[in-house]
Structure formats: structure tokens, C-alpha cells
Image 1 (cartoon, rainbow, N blue to C red):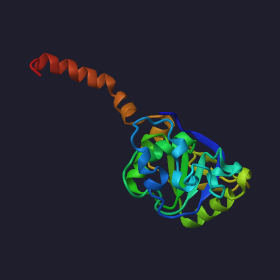
Image 2 (cartoon, one colour; image 1 turned 180 degrees about the vertical axis):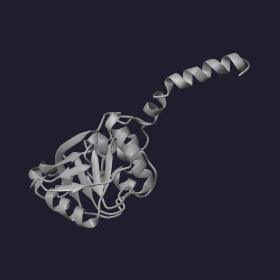
Image 3 (tube, helix red, strand yellow; image 1 turned 180 degrees about the horizontal axis):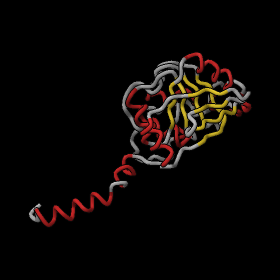
Image 4 (cartoon, rainbow, N blue to C red; image 1 turned 120 degrees about the vertical axis):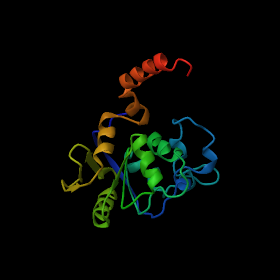
Length: 201
């Protein structure tokens, strides 16, 4: 998993509540277990017409936001089914940070496991960031994970809270496998001992 330290990029505004995982990545794209290639299907039903052409009014189809790396969203983002394809699709598109007033628990946890930083802020701060994000290509926001601080295009700063363990995992690029491998020596020692004391296992 890639390390997350500081992110500077264009923030796309998506002022909708209850964006569920089926909107993030519709069910017809769940046949694959590959993490790459899902970015084109991100928000597919909102991004594309029935004939596959782009809906010009959808935010990520607008020129200013095609390279967005942050998403400012409404309440209860990522609700619905537990599909891990949702953070896969966001990450494959290039979204590395989602900021909202609340997230569904499973989606929130899946973000950390895939190197995406989900930030929870009160509505008044979301309103400020949403206003910043509506500036198009000038909607450049910086997220400093170490300092736990968001800087807007006008220099304003917003602090955010984050669990220390999750913070360390993102900064060091540790997913569940990475965390396990940190104890590789202890695991190897245990296996050696088991082979000697219980050779029938």
C-alpha cells in the first residue's frame, strides 16, 4: 500500500447525502477481483448516459475536475453494501481523500485498508470546503496527515481528528498484511517452536 503523508490536489464537490456503494461502483462491475481498471466505472450511473457517452453536468466529467484527487461529499458517504470495490474504484480514478460529515462504518474501514484517507468534519467545515471545491481548477486543497490539517486555496486551515493507529498505518503504508509482516520474526520463532514441540501438527 502506498504511503500517505501530504496530498495536494483539486477537490471535487459532490454535495449529495447517502451516496451508497452501488452509486460509487454499480453491481455489474463487481465480477473482477482486480483492484485496477475500476476508475472508469466510478459513479458510472451518474457519469454516463445509457449509450456510454459522458453526462457533461456530472462533476468528474468537467475539465476542471477530471484530475481531482480529493472529494468533498455529503453525510453518510459509502453507505449500502460492504463491497471493497468502492474504495478500489475511487483510488483507481485518483481519489485519495474523501471528506464528509460521516461515513458508513465498513466503507470507512475499507478506505484505510486501501490507502484512502476519509476525514470526518462538522457541517460548517464541510460547507467551507465545498465552497472552495466549487472554484474549479483553482480548488486546490492540501491535506497534511502528520499535522492533521487541511489548507484551503485562500490559506485557511482546518484541523481534523484521526485515530493514532490508523494515522500510523497510512503514513507508513501498512495494510493488514503489512501489519502482520511487522511481526514476521515473532511468527517465525513461533513456527520453529511449534515444529519442535508439536511435530505432528
